[in-house]
Image 1 (cartoon, one colour):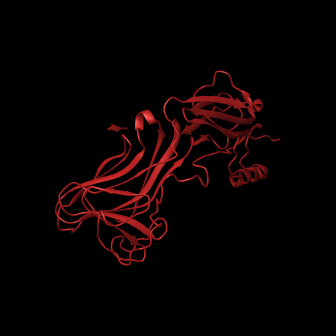
Image 2 (tube, one colour):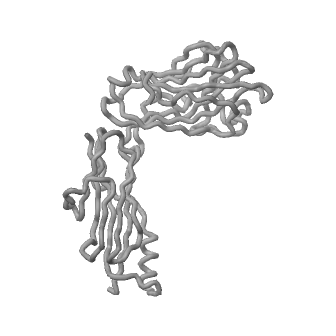
Image 3 (cartoon, helix red, strand yellow):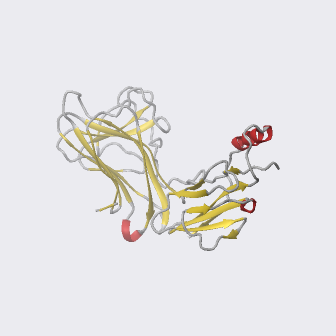
Length: 312
């Protein structure tokens, strides 16, 4: 198992792009919100081999079932995170827990994805020292390391794991939720909104919002790039040769430093370009009504600007 930013002013306005998973990106998990099958009529404990759940395969020894937001049994007045139904998995004999799994179709070698889901845990009676271990694998890779739960969940945990899929590392992409526990009472967990979606690099540039001529300014790009990463900086579309790190230092700023600064971040999954606009004049008189107006205008500007995105 492999574990794995004119009376002249300098005004810096950040116009950032954070390009996360594309809106409406396809979820590769079938029935990840457990809404495909009709509610069986009542909340109950079904032997693992008896209840059908579209897209999912049962394994091990234990019971499972479907619960609804309106029912008081497991989620204790908490709404299902997505839709009206959640899957629960119970183990109350022995220590080897049930597994639920699904083979994920459509994954492409060398592409970037994020696995996410909601998890809630119930550990039997509060008077008994129940413990539950839960871990999640995708093929040969442990996505969520073995985690020991010693207390009941008071809310759903949202868990997210970005990764780059390669057949050589992962093997067959079978997503599996595992559990085991130390006996003492029934122990159960519920799942909802299980998803694997394609994504790309997330990045933004940070820097001071206001600076004056003669000041030193640092623009820093923060990203979640994976592995070996390269940075290419530009000013007004022209490459700044030799600037190949995640921070761009602007020393003793002058009026000529005004312009649009951008950086292209590249890793093995693709590249993303984000921009930062720098407006330069001479000084910022704090009592100036014009200065105050420009600050208000700057503070009101927000939005996203996509300059360029490419796939490796």
